[in-house]
Length: 440
Image 1 (cartoon, helix red, strand yellow):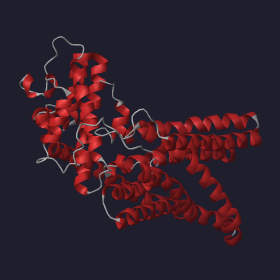
Image 2 (tube, helix red, strand yellow; image 1 turned 45 degrees about the horizontal axis):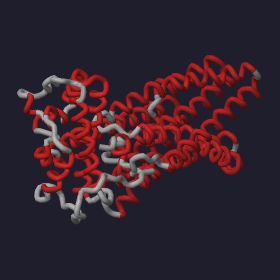
Image 3 (cartoon, rainbow, N blue to C red; image 1 turned 90 degrees about the vertical axis):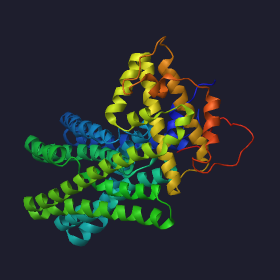
Image 4 (tube, one colour; image 1 turned 180 degrees about the vertical axis):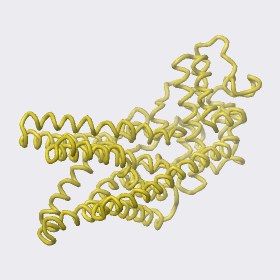
């Protein structure tokens, strides 16, 4: 049997092909990020020579610190059904490149051509920060999420997915923006100003941008998981308005001193708690989807009730990965990770079908997922003469991981369950090789 393209199946793209749009988006974003960082480096050099270059690299290292903490925390929310690394990379680089560069140009033009001439130097700068910057920056970041909604809608299964992508875009944006702020503080106020700026932006409020943009992520996620033109247009717009308002409140609070900052900080903290609550709720709904939609596949031999219980808890999944490592080494552990993600994707695919937002030819993706689950099970046993009994079941036969079955038979059984599974497409006279719609 021809080896399956595991990543392609899990990402919902055509096996053996990579998305030209995604690759182009990453390339353009990297170019924009390098242009922006190059401009900041040049500014440091032209302002203070070699000392300015040193200041730039100090600022760059300082900006990496909060990023290295925030990204693992964001990804921690996404352990049950991790998003594709390539799409997460695009989101981060868009924020660090396209969104930052576009915002820098538009904010600068807006301040020089409108707010300062109209309102004066001081108040014009405040209006630009409190009104202009939130409008421009949240729009620039939100475009990435709209692109994902357009070209990667099938990847957005829950509100958590929208939060994850929004946080990645915003973290990339904050990374390059922090380099600019740290460098400016070093030039204008020296080490003390740099320290204050780092504490404020890197320690006290490093989650500002992710929280703002998460509002857009929620709107985009709702549009991706609910039918209807109104929902698909209104919810992203409402999310954008929420992001702009939160951003404007934070920037505008500087006029009210530490009291104003404290009040808005408390509000943002409440929003953060609410976002965490959304992810917890989504985790429970994903577990419920696994318990609801996988039992019809028990007769295929790919899962058993015990395996479904294992898939429904993080501790059970961890235990299964350890079993696969003992059974078939590193290859087996990777296969178990693929199996777990494929099973979760299968459940979420059926949930999207129930909601009326499944992709066209969804059954092709289903069959490809079944093929991946089958091959992953075979990998668990591939190098072991006597496989280790699964630790999460009372009897080895309670798990499908110690049973072997011919894949064509698995697919035939899946298709035969037309009474218990959702409606199937018309028969084509034979089993087709799994194929995927091209993704962006």
